[in-house]
Figure (cartoon, rainbow, N blue to C red):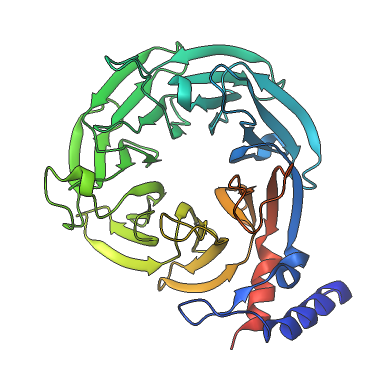
Length: 385
């Protein structure tokens, strides 16, 4: 262990005694405690998803600085080690979600409000084309898109649409043509996970919160339900599985329930619930790490009742589903991405737009934070009771 590491661990141990306790009795690590593992840059106005693309040594960040209809947006390319800016890619349609086809070098940006995808050459940053998915309904409103997944073997692209009935599109990445559209998929279809073979998992609300589709045809295979919402009572959904992450080999689906602030773990073989892990108000994103057998969950600390909170990134030991630690990443840690080594975690961090929030400051912009999980693991081990 280096002198720097020993000093960092000693500092963490000293500060540990003053950290506030979470509801589950664990101490929340403050920035001074996990600083040796972290790098942060505040360069992303209106930041949304982040995406690690290790073959380019980069992490991409979606940016929507202006919510006015017709406004442009950006995708920022940052150095994966230092978070120094490499380039800014301006798009005429605002990007919220990101996904990459590693083999073909294509970056997909989800233009949520416009119901479309922007296709970008990942290496050069050149815009290639728009794939229009959503249609304008009788009410004059465009069907929105949300999450994107890519089949790395075939180049197929999967996209959710969070309408009241839910939509899932399957697109031929080579031609940009929609090969399948599944309507009435799951209420507010949002979360998305692909098993790398033939199954697509879609998260939402309603009586059956998880839908399983054939990844080629888009046909329904089965659905998972907590049993907590009666059929036909979607507007009173007990749960909303907003984001998903999959352990395909282990047969586990991790689902963030933003209504309850919990992480659900489903058995993909039969839909049974393996675990429920309390996270916090405004729970949002999850990513499972096969290398460390951990899951990371972001939460905002606010909901319709709590307006002044701040959030964190919760580390869950997925061997026994215990919460290892929570990191106080202020103000609102949002979306997550892992590098291919499983030892670096990236997160976008939003600032309060509500000027009544105690952390609001005029002119602040969003951030990206990089966490070295090896160092973080050492810091947490030093703090273990």
